[in-house]
Image (tube, rainbow, N blue to C red; front, side, top):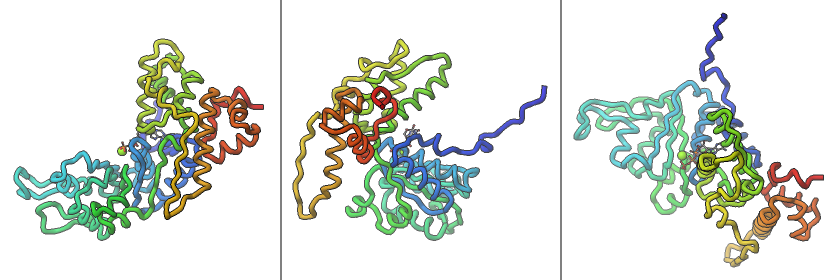
Length: 345
Ligand SMILES: Nc1ncnc2c1ncn2[C@@H]1O[C@H](COP(=O)(O)OP(=O)(O)OP(=O)(O)O)[C@@H](O)[C@H]1O
Ligand SMILES: [Mg+2]
């Protein structure tokens, strides 16, 4: 029998739409931006709440870049103690400090010709920030205890789950580094601002589980999906991913129903009539954004209360079905297809 040629992972082209799932306009735009910056060498600063997919985005940029066959080296600046971070990143010479028995390469050197992903960059001590700036400006790395710097060719992608400009204002983060890092800023919207992707993501995670456990029939009921859709997901996509895994484990039958959802998820649904408290400060308010936000919340509540039925939700808000649909699209709370099949026409 003829042998199948072996295909290495490298020969399978990277598909950004399979790594970064979503059809919400914010995600469609994000994928386009990823493709655009991947073909350049610019430094990128990714901001987004925890679990929104910052590492997924960083990896996608690397995989679509000309550096894809070189290392992608993630460094979590928050997980490495401050006094170790410098030698981890820059390496050290023998005897540079107590316990440095031999010399060692740093992660910047490991990432040479590839990409270094500096996660939680806001946690980097100020002294190290100056050293990082030199890497970005001059492309050189000086290991701890070394008297000479060596050249590296790394692309830097940084990420933060806090707004770094606040840290700059407080003096905790160097302004020059901030501007140098965010040549292209990428902001990932929290999941609650792109709810229409929740069913898509939930199905994606279910599919992945099905792939691991062939023969397992499992799906999410329409009501349970509406509940998932209404929840605010403070932990974003990671929380949804973990939730789906947990629900599959706990589900004995083949349908995940509302009764299986944790209480906090079902109970945390937002009040039907959102309180509107607006103070007109000196800076004023953006009335259009405010109105849109309120519309979005009411539409969301109406859909929740009607189990995702657009016709009924429109009636509840005293709107024509077509007006309701137009508002849905404009507010970015596009009703997912799976919530929408019973009332079209
Ligand atoms: N759009 C998406 N499509 C598919 N999976 C996603 C998407 N966004 C995030 N994920 C998945 O969610 C999880 C969290 O993503 P990731 O680690 O990139 O988030 P993060 O923003 O880096 O989080 P943290 O701030 O906690 O480090 C991962 O398992 C990732 O694969
Ligand atoms: Mg991360």
